[in-house]
Length: 102
Image (cartoon, rainbow, N blue to C red):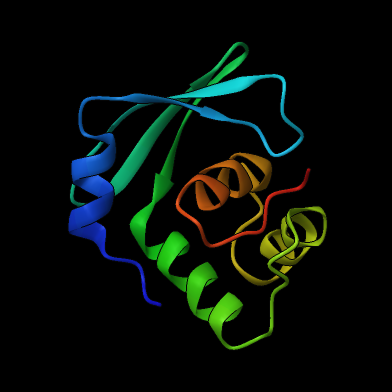
């Protein structure tokens, strides 16, 4: 199932608190627009680009990258981008592309 970016924008345009992969904590999605998702954690602010997220999902769908968040992070760093891979895992789990870790 490809990423429906219009759905992502609707879901996050007003912000959201999403659970982390390991649970017990949350990450703040500040908003989303046509090019990226803006996120904030206790010690960082970042943007997750639409291009990288769509690429990661294509790799998941092709079976190249694991749906298991524990393995996804390393695959994402190597095959997509070496930035905020754990945060990407939180978002993709919230969107239903990665399996729940618990």
